[in-house]
Image (tube, rainbow over all chains, first blue to last red; front, side, top):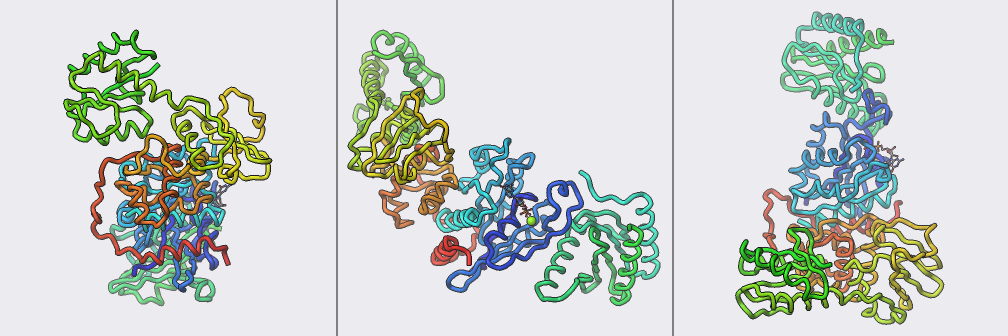
Length: 176
Length: 129
Length: 313
Ligand SMILES: Nc1nc2c(ncn2[C@@H]2O[C@H](COP(=O)(O)OP(=O)(O)O)[C@@H](O)[C@H]2O)c(=O)[nH]1
Ligand SMILES: [Mg+2]
């Protein structure tokens, strides 16, 4: 049986670390360090290796959650972290300049993994004045025959993180 | 994009220090200073290597080292060492924002690499104060 | 005014059609115009010239248009309107007049004050889906709600929640004209999944007018997150219906074990939210992706879902 491992990715500040914190039973393992570039105006710290959290099932089996670094220079970590993963959660932050472009970039970069498994997209900070409509995000999926879930979420809420995982699990189970 | 950059004076100081390190041991063939969040700042390579990729990787591995230490209930990660069949890569923090990485062949002895690197990191920290 | 377009007609037939439409205006009760493209009220489909006329017709009907079959043969196994080749004014006029009666059938303002059986509310969904009811008042006992479907918002008074009110056996539904004062304007609550929810809750066990139970449905948007929180089955149903080739209701039942009445509700909701379309055929092969890892057991997925709905420890 494959390892039960889910991966969370997305641009810096989208809420990957926050999501794992919200849902993990154990205090998450974090590798955040000080930001020294442009991002420091938005965030003091950024993940450079991975976040890690876990959820225990009634059987005693564990679901591992891995958060990736967001920046493209950490692409090598993306490849390491998806190894053996069950599915992907992409978070997209509407307060960034071009959230549609962000989504395209992550879909493209993880396309092999997504093709083999499945993906759910969580859109955060949808109340931003310039936030695109959900339908615009759906257009990014058009090249793919499978329609993956795109859900507006508040990633600080456990219930919303659970919803994303639930959508991903349903996709993996029924939408292959 | 605004990035951490050395002043001309600091850059000269570093290049000077890199030269001293190379003079101390001819096993050393790469020295890299990068930020904790993975950008390259200064380097001296005797061989072609991808500095920006290495910078991101050094930042990941050092952060992992520090995190692993905490999980194993050990204190203060000093170095992360990658030991290979034909060389060593040794990485350590310089103050709170920078990382020093030293790449050497197996002709070096690990104790000596430790002390050269530690020395350099301290000097640099003092200079940048 | 009604619009007409065509699919698959030869250039010559198109020319004839246009000139006939111009000629006929005086002899039909409504005004008809020929439109080059877009979603016209009526589409004449040349079933002899198209490779997949079934698919074309399904799509037209799924968006509430009227499809007219145009072919050489004079027999058909459907109740659909048809014209036999070649095009003749008399045939067109007779077909147009029946189209007019079909298109206007739902236009009587909908009021339901009895509302005891499920079937009684079903008609309202047809009105909504035809765009003839965008503002509704639903009331039951002490509660009353104005539902603004075009802006995805509602305003509610009383002790019931919106979902409770929509399924209340004593509810009364009235359609309101958009300009009618509602008296609730101050406390609109936005709800992204309002159309979806209304479609589900007001379903009477039947698919909305133009949908056929045997069709293959394909979801192209998942429901907004707020619906998924209200309706636990939404995730499973969305996943199955968003497969490459979509799924028939029977297939959904077989895959999920969810009763077909719930599936029909969900499809009605998706249809009002414009999130679903009809697919002609299945193009799914068993598994066409190489190197796909063996999926984990069904039990595992259930366990993860269970764990997530439990409160954190
Ligand atoms: N105000 C506001 N803050 C949010 C919202 N969603 C996430 N955040 C914050 O955005 C930050 C996301 O940071 P982090 O989780 O480190 O992002 P990462 O780079 O993806 O790991 C956290 O401080 C969250 O509290 C939101 O909807 N509103
Ligand atoms: Mg992070």
